[in-house]
Length: 88
Image 1 (tube, helix red, strand yellow):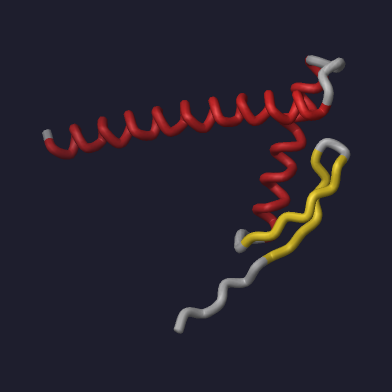
Image 2 (cartoon, helix red, strand yellow):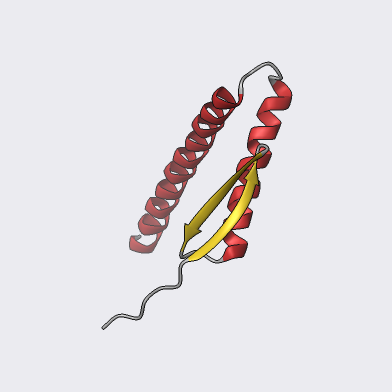
């Protein structure tokens, strides 16, 4: 029988709204993620002060997804390069 994972529950504030987040990640990690999302939304809003919060959230999500996909591509290229070096 598997031990039951501990589910952490924490309330965070992102862009002036409170969210209760539950997950098995450490509380500190959840806070770090929420803080990062908040900062990204705040920075985008400062550059575009007339955007409504929903558009700020969507555009922030698009920007973060772009960052993630670029990092994945870089990671895959690096792994391929390391594999080629190890074979040669």
